[in-house]
Length: 117
Image (cartoon, one colour):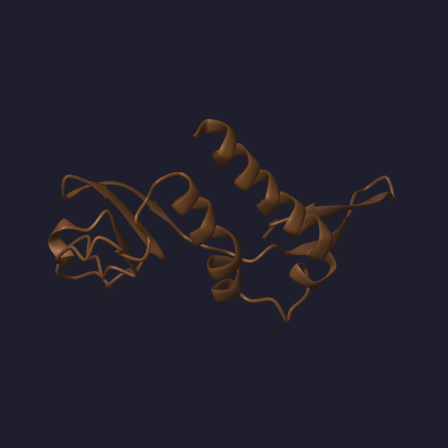
C-alpha cells in the first residue's frame, strides 16, 4: 500500500514537471491547482475529499470552503479545505497557484522567487 501511494505521488510530481510551463502561467488558476494536484494528493493520502462515503456535512472528513467566523463582528472566512477527524477541525488549507517572478537584489543579481509577495 505504501509503495502504491509513493508511486501515485511520484506520478503527480512527474505530471507537474512535464507541464510546469503551463502550470506557472496566468492561464492555470487556483481551481485548477485544486482539481489537478491538491484533491488527488489528499485522496492518495486517504482523505475523503469528494465525500465518497456519503456522510452528512457534520460527519465529513473534508469540508470545501466552509464558512468560518472568528467572532460576530468579523467577516466570514472560507478556507479552501477544512480537514477534520471525528468532526473536530484539525487543519485548514488555502490553495494558491504557483507564482514566479524575478526579484532584484542590491548587488544587481536577480533570481526567481516563488510565492514572494
